[in-house]
Length: 147
Image 1 (spheres, rainbow, N blue to C red):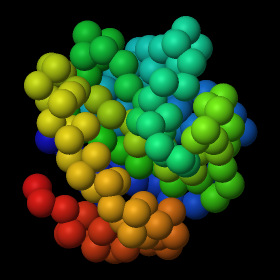
Image 2 (cartoon, rainbow, N blue to C red):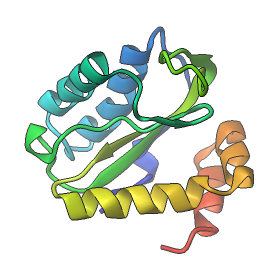
Image 3 (cartoon, rainbow, N blue to C red):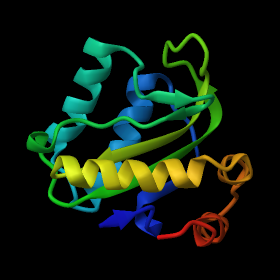
């Protein structure tokens, strides 16, 4: 399982749209060989068909698709945006933290979501993730989670 490893975190990014943000976050997973390019397309398709259902909290989106869309290994990447991007969610826009999630089974999906929710349930962690200037600060935040 790859969970916010150094190569899966991009800080101070800029995105022109929700689709761009989803593709950038998913691209981190693709570059690491954890998902196929088709998985990025599937995440965007899911967003276009179903709307911003994965914008789960103010400023936080967790785009994902189905395992059969091209996931090789359970993984989570983080795209931290300098400026928030509207995803079309009435309460939680704009989004600044995009966690691309890939799971190859429903059990993995739940396990990854549980780890993310544990991390993001603490408002201090969210604030630290929003303000992180380098990967060491991300590692520090994750050190506080029980993995």
